[in-house]
Image (cartoon, rainbow, N blue to C red; front, side, top):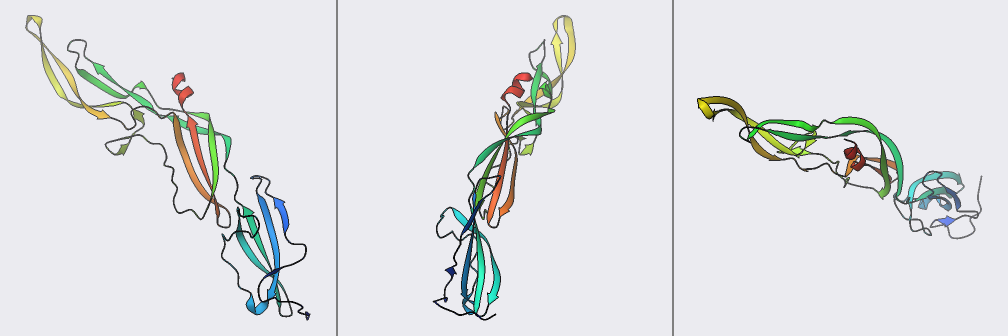
Length: 229
C-alpha cells in the first residue's frame, strides 16, 4: 500500500485517537498507550524508563513497531504510572527466637549452668504479617536488611546473655566438706539483646513492568507473640 505523506513526519507524530488509557486492577496505576507515525528511515526506539510526555509519573515500559505503510512507520509506546506504596496483610510462618537464661549456684551464687533456651525455646506458628509493597525504577540494591540475631558475628536463634563453660571448681563447705561445681563465665550479649518488636522476616524484589520493579518487605509485630510466651 502506498501512502500519501502530507506533513512533516521526520519526528514522531501522535496519531488521532491516541492515547488509550486503562487502569491496572491490582495497583490502580494508569496504563497509557500512545500510537505514533514517523518516516521509516527516521524511526529509532527510545530507551525504557523515559517519562510520558503528559503524565510525569508514568514511565515507558516498552515500545513496539507496528505496521509499515509506504514510507511511514507506525509504532506504539506503552507507559505505566509508578504505583503508590501500599500495605497488605499476609499470613506467614514465623519462628520466634528463644531467650537464654543462666543458672546460679544456691551455695556460691556463681554461674553453674547456661541454656540458650532457658527462658523460652524458639517456636514456629502462623502469624499475621504486614507486607509493604513499593515500586522503584531500575533499582541497584535492596536497602532493607532481614532482621537477625548474632553473637560474635555468627547468627543465633536466641537473645540474651551468653555464658561459656570454663570447667569444674571445688568449693569448700563447713565441716571440711568439699563439693564440686561447674563454672560458667560471662561471654557477652547477643545483638540485639532483646527480640525486635518489628521483625523484618522477608525482603523480595521482582520486575513488575519494564524498568519498574516491585519490592515487598514482610514484617511481623512480635509484641503479642512475646506476651503469649
